[in-house]
Amino acid sequence: MDDVVFRSPRRRGRLAVFLSGRGSNFMAIREAVGRGGIDAEIALVFSNKADAPGLLRARESGLETLFLDPKAFASREDYDRAIIEEVEKRRIDLVCLAGYMRVLTPALCDALKHRIVNIHPALLPSFPGLHVQQKAIDWGVRFSGCTVHFVAAEVDMGPIILQAVVPVLQDDTEETLAARILVEEHKIYPEAVRLYFEGRIEVRGRRVFILGPGG
Ligand code: GRF
Image (cartoon, rainbow, N blue to C red):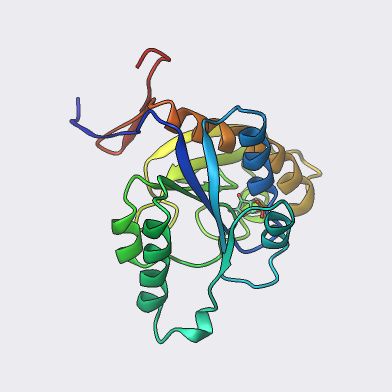
């Protein structure tokens, strides 16, 4: 058995959500936080897009939001350095990427190791990258789904925390499959965050073990 390399903290957490678009996963997490299903507060909603609908919704609901314009920075490294500062300044325990459409620099991945997770609309390690619902249809796979995983420098390849399976139907289009996968995303993302702050996520090697409620 591989050594334990990480065990998530059992405490009331401070969350940040990073998004670039509509923010439905952010809303699912916010809803779970709101009804006490996750022992955390959303301390920051961050975007690289000033007009991301998710950012506007966060602002409307009174959460702290932050937009940093990538064009105002000389390099991706500088941009991500600024992000790290903002995250550390707010003592964020966990960053949830939720449709955040920028590749992270290795420095950011390292600085937030085991403190940053992502949701991907396919069963990783199959179909990393973009337009993965269409790729699943084109490959004729019978099942796709979604994956919550830790973020590592290699895109979409960090240790897998939770997955949900969705059948691919013969008459599926990219849109219909994406919509059915999204329903599952909204279940497993809040669930993964809940487990994280219950201290129940343990990483051994590249595998994640979900511990029982007693730890
Ligand atoms: C989701 O499909 C998620 O899996 C992917 O980006 C999309 C974000 O959707 N990473 P939303 O902004 O959360 O609605």
